[in-house]
Image (cartoon, rainbow, N blue to C red; front, top):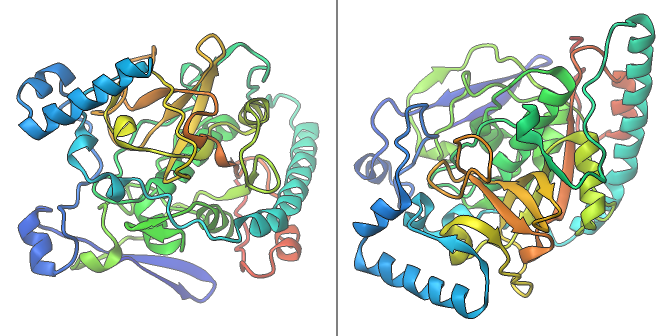
Amino acid sequence: MLECWKEGSILKYRVHTLFVALSLVAVATLGSAQVPPLPKPPPNEIIFNYQDREAKAPAAIKSRLAALRSEILAKHFTFKVGYTGPADRPLELIAGMTKVPKNFRELALVHSPKAVELLRHDAIAMKAYMNKNRSYRPFLLPNSHSAAVDLRQMGRVSPVKDQGYCGSCWDFAACSSYESSDLIRNNRLVDDSEQQILGCSGGGTCAGGWYMPVFNWMMAHGVTSEAKVPYLAVDGSAAQHTMWAGEPDYYFAAAWGFVIPDGGIPSVQQIKDAMMQHGAISVAVWADSAFQHYTSGIYNEHVTNMGINHAVTLVGWDDSKHAWLMKNSWGHNWGDTCGFGTERGYMWIDYNCNLVGYHAAWVDAKSVHWVIPHGIYQSLFKDLMIKPHPEG
């Protein structure tokens, strides 16, 4: 399993991983998960054609799609469905934003003033750096009142990933927002280790979680790279064979916060404002069978009586579509390109659809140029034991 322990003042990590194919037989032998672990898609992942795949689909899948299309037609929805990759996975397994504590509002209200204070000190540190380095120019995002924004077109969104047979959407949503912020603040593409977050952050397991503990972990301890601790889509106890991960490179969060102080659903404009200040925004949404089979169009189901069960990332918007540009973590055989590039895994989702935006949160990657003094963290977060953030 993935173990986290302290040696002196340095936090180290050990990864126990499988050196055999991740298969039903292997998992059954270990007596753990009931479904095969599915790693992140490799660069040469086979991207299938939805129509070709549906033509060869089992009768049950064809019946399910026919029922969904009848509902879409009857209710005048504006999206299409097909035989996506995640359609083969149990929805309750991959929609894992399910461990939000009942007192989340209290937790959010306690944290929000601290987030404001961290932003103030980050701005002070940035100003001091810019006064000494006159040539430095931060990357500036568009005006939040723009009619349309796509962070992908600015190179400020990391690639789509696949959480596999694991309810770790909360993990991927948090890492996606962090990676976007690092592209904005440091002009570099980092690939966070979702496996380390899954095993060490306390945010949850493959049975579900939520991202507040993830952001706290990033701020307190940092996160290493995917190359150092690769994703296995399993909880730690499902793996074996010790492998030393080496001394990881840590990517720290300078600050994080909810878009509105109580962690509820912000207005459309409040989310736009936060996105243009911080980058991609982690949000919760209700995902059901129609969501699971989405292939294109503007998703406008508007279910409001089911709560939330999935975590995703908002990376843009288009007012002419009345929709957010949403990035998912179900791989490249789900969703659409949404009008940019060739990478699928995105959705246009109608503003306020299916409670999208609940628990909206931002995270700021630590700048490689300046650092918030460690004493500020110590005074604000006495319970987190935050490590000193490295210079550079």
